[in-house]
Image (cartoon, rainbow, N blue to C red; front, side):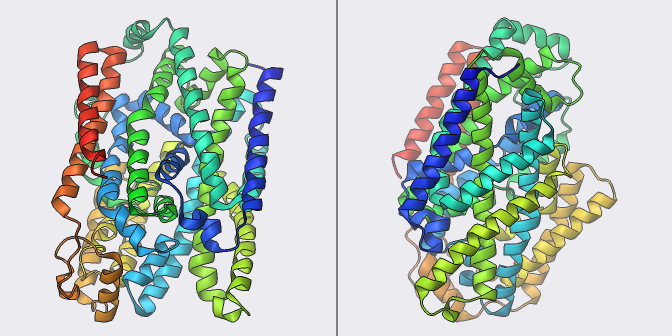
Length: 567
């Protein structure tokens, strides 16, 4: 479908919006790393939460979901829906702890929790490891997703699109910092949601409505593609479903769903004005991410299977639906929606990755603050280097994107590479015996297990089991054969963070945390029930029983109300 004048006008308006926000962010002032990487640490919960959602609303996500549904049905989405367990544990257990830590990055937290040279090494190594291999891989698959969309709807070369998009985004984030990111995230989320819902409406109407869609799907697949039960789908092996629901959410590191929180989710929690806003923002993120966003993508994916049944690259079905069904004006809005999704994700990844490079490596090991004439001079220098590092990291991400052709493949690669380190991430807050060597050994063992799994050509589920089992065994053994952290380190950590439970009793001087584990876990359970009820309820409204769908939505609303009223 060719662009009309109205489409070009919509796109130009969006670009002018980015320029305006970048100008305001620059004028607002970014005199320190706290300003540049944490927005001054005074953001409200609604801005924090929507920014998290917008970041995970990447251009690659609807494409990946389209590919998942084509191969495994709607139930295949439990591959990522299961991460809600980790996300909700972060809300009710870890968000307060992260805010109390009062650091700029989760890598900086390492030298609060551990001490000595092992902690220093771990902080620097983890910063570079996640800033470059991991972060650039993430940006690589996000870029592939966006390039597929733009190639389908514009006919331009993927590489032309990638270079233009990165050039625009890198310059924008280098100028605006995190404050500019979260402000545009807020606007971009609503643009992307409106666009996604509109595309779903036009797509379903294109095939004659939901009833007709359900009927036509029967001629495309020979199983219940609409089922949300991963254990009943013939396309999903039982062991794979068990890995999704029972292991992936706690065992592996994945951006936005890190066990115990971390990465850019931790960055957003650091940027909140207080603990309550950190908790509220993270809860809003999980509800919106898992309960509100998926269905518009799902509907378009289902329609694409009917309209393009012979399509080889099923992920491309989503952007092809845009070109197939969108009227003038809406086509431009959907292009802006995808551009918004891409910019929000890449800007966060660049800002977050650069925060590791500058705060946890450059300022920690290369040029320390005490080497400058004044703290103000140091901060100005660090902000300047941060801008330069942002541009450099964007260039590396462009190169990495060359090696990706499947979005879901990138998801599975990251999960396999980090399988097993999640146990350390969860327990280090509560078990004093874990030390810096525990984390170091877990990372080395996970990478080793992933390489071995690749050499043995194991399937995803087999790789997860092997790598998680191996790395968990390694870090547990290392924990007990190495010395614990020094008493002063553990005592200082407890006094600042005040983790719940009795695991820190030897270092608490009798002053245990006021937070309670059992009520927090009950809130996690109620929130999981609410989100699952929302997912099932919306599905029933679309394809099943009106009464059952409304009942599920009411039940989910009651469950989440019991949680929210206590925050």
